[in-house]
Length: 114
Length: 113
Image (cartoon, rainbow over all chains, first blue to last red; front, side, top):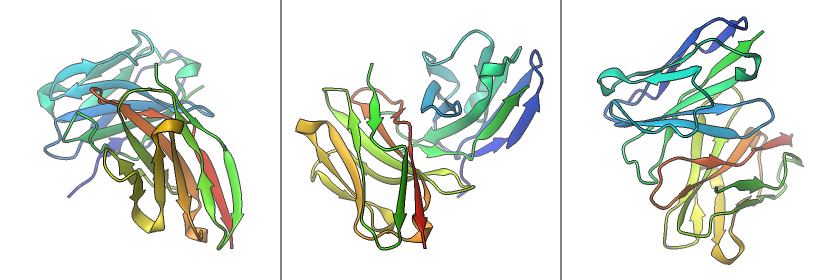
């Protein structure tokens, strides 16, 4: 069974540019989560999809971040325009069960904004 | 809002030493508790989890954790660490009725051979 995959693994962009991160969850997992870890801090929740619907987006930092999951399969997270404080590792996770079930994580995308 | 506190940010041990990593959480209701591990260059992966029942849970690679409700704690233990246990360890919690993980800051464990 293929795990959660993320693309790209690394991205270096300049302040003001746009970046789109992609996550492919485990096949059959309706729940998809985005998390972020800024250097030196804890991993923080960004948002949660159930199929194509946003179940909870309370962790999104501001309106420069846009997440989509068209068709309920893969998801994208776009940052536009990127700021220096957006640098960090963006993790995607998926799960079968939403209520406290095990979440399987991807390898993360390391984003550096210069 | 719930929070998770991990007591040590960096731990250095020699092989065969015993390990205990502390974790406390703030939420007073029913919780599901997790320890995740990230080995160098690898994904976050689940080490063990507690949902209900026996408060002493056993995970992979000889790790175990004990849930003590009265202390809001879920400490991770291993009686004898190996060099291959070098990794970053994360304690996390999901409150009942919710589905998102709240993580601690992580503990970097370095085991010297």
